[in-house]
Length: 208
Image: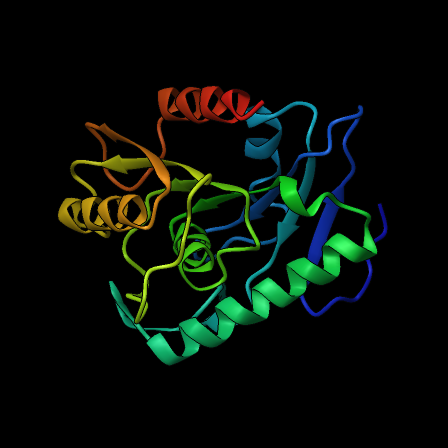
C-alpha cells in the first residue's frame, strides 16, 4: 500500500487475513525497506509486514546507526537512532492502525542490533523480537523490565563479524532483564541458514 511520510522510508504490506501481528523488518548493512519482506512472509504468512530503511549511510549502504569500525559502534548515535526509530514505530502504529501490543521485530545483523537496542532502551515498543546475528549494542545504565517479552536469537559459531561470546552476553543481558530468550547456535558464519529460518518461523508461530 502507499505509505505516509513518518520520518523513515518504509514499506507496509497489510496482513492478508485477520492477524493483528506486525513484523517490523530491520535490514542488515546495505539493505533497504524491501530487503526482508520475503523473510518476513516466510516467518508468518498472515502478519502485516513493515519494512524500514536505515537513515545512516556508510558509503552507499544504509544502516540504522553509525559505527566507528567493524564491531565498534558510535554509542551516542546508536542511542539517538534507537529513540528516533521508537518514535517512528509509535507514529506508524497510529497512522496504520497497527496493534501496539503485537509488534515483533525481525532484524538481521545491523537491524538485529538496533532491535536489541530498542528492547534495552525503549522496552515498551516491541512485544517480542527475532534477532538474527546480533551482539550487545549498548549497556544501559539500568536494565529495563522485559518480563513477558520473548526473544529468539540465531548466532553463528564461526561468525567473523559478531563474536560468539558477545552474542552470549546479549542473551544473558536480556535474560537478566526478564525476557525469555531462545538462543540457537549454528555451525555457520554471518550468513543465515535455512534451518535457522525454520527455527525462527516456529518461534513466531509459538507467540500465538
